[in-house]
Length: 76
Image (cartoon, rainbow, N blue to C red; front, side):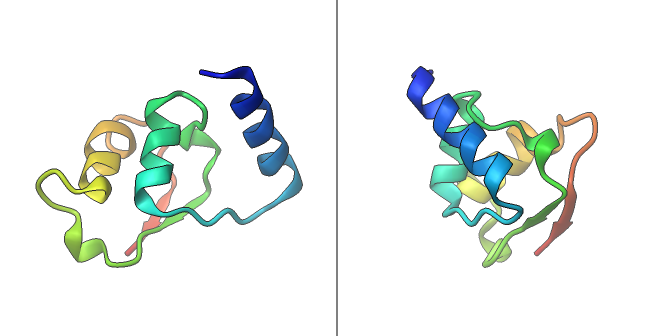
């Protein structure tokens, strides 16, 4: 993880209550350890009917959401 990315996202999180991502970017941040799902209160997935197979939404749910000790509320 590049330090400037971590610092950038810490700044974004501290300054904003709502963050909007495309699924691929959000998955990249989660996989890279730059963003922690436990910091999310509500996760809204638009087009959630795509959350199957190897889709980014499905990977977020399988690899991060379902493994999170305290997952956020989910709206699809």
